[in-house]
Image (tube, rainbow, N blue to C red):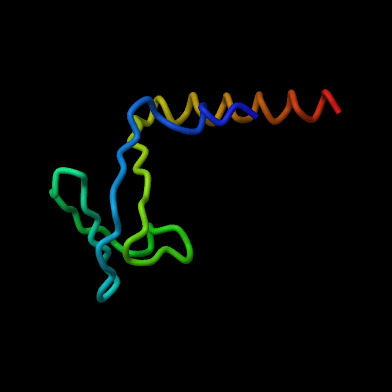
Length: 79
């Protein structure tokens, strides 16, 4: 499967600074930070881990889902 269809053209890299009281602080390379609900973190994420934020519009997400479905179907039919 073409992994590039799973990400936007400009993913953001952030570092998980800390998790406290169900909140996660993410720090960007320019030292700006944002706090999100920790439930949005991938399982087993810990302080210091680098994460990729993939910002997409609803339209882009819909296109991506359709392309993934096509790729999976193509893989299945080729086997």
